[in-house]
Amino acid sequence: TLPGSLIDLTSYPDFDSYLTQTFSNKRRSYFKKCENMLHACFDISHKVYYGAMEKEVYESIFRAFQRMQSDRFKQLGIKDDSMGMWPIYEKNTLQLVLEKKACISVIYDGSKPIAISLNYLLGKAVFGFTKTFDMAYAKFGLGNFMLLKMIAWSHQEGFEVLDFMKGEYSYKNRFTDNSYAFLIQVAYSKKNLKQRVWGLTLTLGLRVFYSLYHVYRFLGLHGLLRQKTYTREKESPVKSQELSKNESSILPTETKTHLDAIKNKDFKKAVCDFCFMNKEPLKSIELYTTEVGEEYLKLISPSKAVLLTNSTSKTRR
Image (cartoon, rainbow, N blue to C red):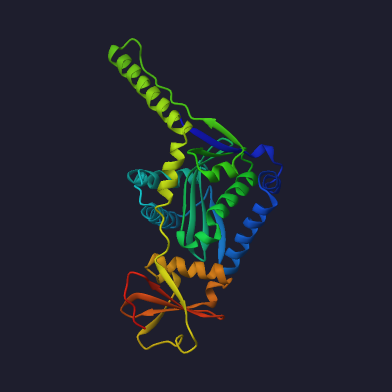
């Protein structure tokens, strides 16, 4: 049916050898640069919940997980087909974590989750079920950082396979070293006429569907569709204007705020982008906005002051 991909962890004596054999010097340097920038700009930590997890922590992480996942799909302008399954995942996964049949990998900025992956475990195999991250931190290569942390953890814990499961994405081609085909088996009773008709009809329907899919895939049309989907991500509507010393003074109508309190996701991403571009730690930056709402955001760092405005709004300073 569909192609899948995985990493054979037994092929590498340690995580460093995986990096060396899989990625070029340039790519490894890029990973290291992004990691160093993350730690320099934010209070970054990583934790894998495996065998133990408090219920309150679990519920908090799942809320953040669903929120980030929803935001990501909205940004892409596509529907999250798994939305209806989230209550089932949330109900069952904590017990699986306690039984070491699942693990949840979380990247934190302080106490706030900014990247989460849910993985199910069977024997010596880790199945990367689903993952998401806060798009405000996208410039820092957070998706790559999260994957590398999970690969290192899986190797350290003695797992032999990290299965990325079905789906064709460019990042999977970069990180995995083996591919395979997903299979569907249809089971039915040949003695029961109704079941036999159902089984043969379903089998025929599946064969036709996946035959057409593989023609579609062979022609490269699936790649064009995905490219079209991802081009829906529009450029940020936030405009940045550097302020003079006089313009950077704080007005009586402005109030100090912080990154987590910013509701406008475009402003939030613009602040993180500023940290990346200027190598400024978030804790060294002061943020101010109007008392009546986020019409604009004034960002004051040790090196410069910047006014962030939304191109769709009329801003008064």
